[in-house]
Length: 573
Image (tube, helix red, strand yellow):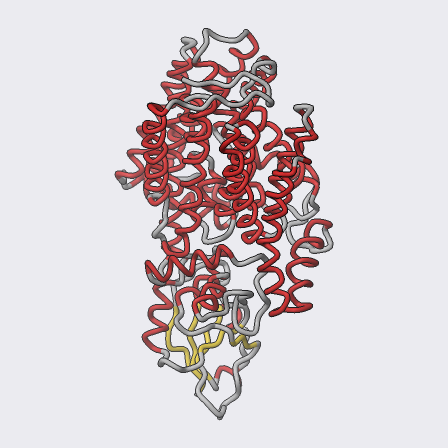
């Protein structure tokens, strides 16, 4: 097992040729295994209110040829970020057809590539155990897995900026003859990241690199001609699209993508996701459960080993802290922004676990915290499984149901049904959680870290698989408008206008072959020049006065899908 203990200036020893083939095979297996696992996490589930489903109109416009600066819907605003993700989705639609998995495939592939990238990097620079535990922690991270399921930019952006940082590190410490190739890869990754989410693709890798080099006392490395050329070329490549987009969109492009989406959101002028400075900290903890219970142990392990940390681990520290500080400094804080902080956090967790397993124990404090974290994770897994079993046996108490949000009540009701009917999926999660929790507890009590960490890993993966592979798709099937829109499409003639009273639902836009670009506030009065079909929420339709009601006929209705009730299809008389 190879390791790196030297300083930044020491070139990284290259693995022998005999090691390259096994490393390639392992990395390929990690990629295919990660992709297969992610495909089981509701990749084929119907869309509901995912923002990406609303943005699917941009994919339609790309497919029609408007690829430079697409709009979300005809007559609506231009897209808020550069369109690389929609280009990728359009290619996937060409290959797979207009279906859910096609729009999700760039995110799924991006997440799988992130896992493989971290594995290959850590396997070659630190060791197999660190690489393995880092990937396990990442693939059981709720935020990361959720981003992989969403038809949006986040998972694609994460793999690109992660790739840029890894390639930058390789360029700094790899063999001199490979430096140009690594810098070229850094440049391409930064350019594509910028075409995915704007200037953040340039800023975030540069921030991680600058903080790392500053901490290493090698800030002059930032001004080496090769590195300047790499970032300069990335900027020039991205500017090719920015110039074309400005030629198409003009002042609207500058206002939407530069002023509103970047500056106003960062400074807080845009009300979207405005939160205090500390907002992200608790969400890092909840989003990384159960591994976040190990973070005190990880912090102690890093501190105790600060003089012998491998270079990739030192880089991951500033990668994580730099990203978290940057996003916390922004006044606009949407939870999706947090996804890029989890790969470096997984690296730090994986290294701490591997380092402990390779030793007899580093100290009392370190030992105390890993046992405490393992006990809490194991106890939590057992408590969750026992609570779910109690729901199936006795049902949920009324006082608990009454105090929950409607969405939480839906989850609780579904868990009660799954537990009460002893579904195979529930039984598998139940047994795995109990067994994993017991293993974690035994490992902690008997001071056998390998058993304890294995129990935590099984509990984490089982919980992630049950939530995203069973619960989330089941909830989606209950609240999606997919069956209703199939009914609508069988009724509304091809070429007829299909309007929406109020804002269209995201999933209705995706599942309609008609462009839901016509929005009306009120239905037309009797005797309109042409027949109009329109969809309305039940609560809005209830506000129609008798005269308006007399001019329309209700011809189809969905099941109640949210607090707004059913969706109703009307036609004018």
